[in-house]
Amino acid sequence: MHQNKHFRGTMDHMNLAYQLLQATTPLAQLLLLVPLLLLLGHSISRGRHGSKKQRPKRCLPPSPPGLPIIGHLHLVSDLPHVSLRGLAAKHGGGGLAAKHGGGGLMLLRFGTVRSLVVSSPQAAQLVLRTQDHAFASRPASKVADVLFYGSTDIGFSPYGEHWRQLRKLITTHLLSIKKVNSNRDARHDEVRLVMEKIREVAAAAKAVDISEAMNTFANDIVCRAVSGKFFRAEGRNKLFRELIEANTRMIDGFNLEEYFPGVAKALGSLTGWFTSNKADEARKRWDGLLETIITDHEGRRRSSEHGHVAGGVEQEESDFIDVLLSVQKEYGITRDHIKAILMDMFGAGTDTSSLVLELAMAELMRNPQLMTKLQAEVRVNTPRGQQMVAQDDIASMTFLRAVVKETLRLHPPAPLLLPHLAMVECEVDGYTIPEGTRVIINEWAIGRDPESWEKPEQFMPERFTEGGSAAAIDFRGNDFQFVPFGAGRRICPGLNFGMATVEIMLANLVYCFDWELPAGMKKEDIDLTEVFGLTVHPKQKLVLVPKLRAIGAHALQAE
Ligand code: HEM
Image (cartoon, rainbow, N blue to C red; front, side, top):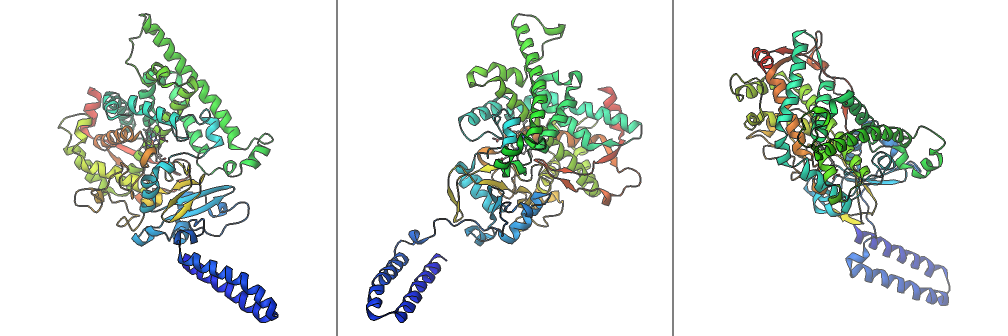
């Protein structure tokens, strides 16, 4: 392709020379001939030697035609992951990976921000593994700066020593497999509370708002691991939920303020409608809540150091906030850093797990034969007479895991992961990616890529079971056709925590109850239309009617 360009350039020089030679006197012809011959010679020698030198400086990935000022913003609908897939199918071809069924790189401009969109497993592998070191940072975000104390949390922190330290801290003290296992009793306790509530609803022949119930549950699980039983005081868990929801809406990555920072700066103080103004409000509310919780913990720590037990209540085992306070000096973190980390834990850990649960239940209700199959597996593998499914029973439930995987494939809670950033100029699949380019990985499109998945739009958990077409594929960041937790340095550190939360709850929902749709509703009426945000939610709430199984009734009462 580059040689063709040179050939064309050489031909242009020759045409020009020919025309000039025709139009001028012999002396002028001679005088003109010399520089033209020199130019021609130079072109030819560039064509012959050093094929690298002849390449244009930058061969950028393909782009659809854009508009002045807004760039490609008008091409993105209110479901960006869907429009980006459509655009990538038309414009994201080419590249070396295309030869292997890949391609999947497309360059867009949103306002002043250049964005690389990654839409195939091959391209995702190049960005998240081969060049992970170059793409492991996050783009600066005014909203994240306001919300997360100057982006000093983990999720929005730029790549570097601060991020490394915090990540080490949370993976060691909260999210390691050992820690996740040690939380099993607390998890079991929280699941039991939900089952009790559902039982009451079932006894009254009413319906359960599954979306709400799963969100509360996931939030309670994280809050309990992070701040002990403290969080239940004075309706704090409700406030947490409100604040988390507000954050998710504000940091969806498609925020005009971030695409026109100059305009936003000029107008920001005059108007109240910019997201960062709202973020400021939310941060003040977060700060008040976190300050109270941290101060409570400090008080407890002081009491126990002096041999007192706060409020006459038995001292509980230390939670994550206690750990953060005790390692503050060792890790060199400030009080604001602690608050930023806590916001991450509450935010990243709640919505994600609860969405997987809600959507798994929705898909099972749409596919009753799969619900029956899952119930059979869970009920057979739970020891007879046992009131609830326990963590240890889950190990043998392969279909349960397949259902969760299939839910993550079709409905990844964060369809565009979190944005990455090119820290240096680098080359991906023969294209130059300029330093500072924002990178959007369209995991939603990758999970539905027909090159990688058989009948990609269908919910078929069997594909992940033994003998299935995707039996060997896992979500731990090694199989790039399936990266709902991301991959590489920025892979979700809460993967084990999230999976443990989802599996134990789903198993118990289908073990303890049979489920029906509200009167007059058919399975075809379950609407999965989405609302976009950093995490994507179904527009319609999932409301289901629980029916008690005999075992559930005795068991839950007996506990
Ligand atoms: C099913 C549950 C979950 C899913 C699907 C999920 C998904 C993700 C995704 C897609 C990312 C971005 C990866 C990237 O940028 O490439 C992420 C990052 C993150 N997640 Fe999760 N997550 C889940 C549960 C959790 C839980 C339970 C926690 C903690 C309690 C957590 C904490 C985090 C943090 C701190 C980050 C930022 C990592 C960094 O930037 O280095 N996640 N998660």
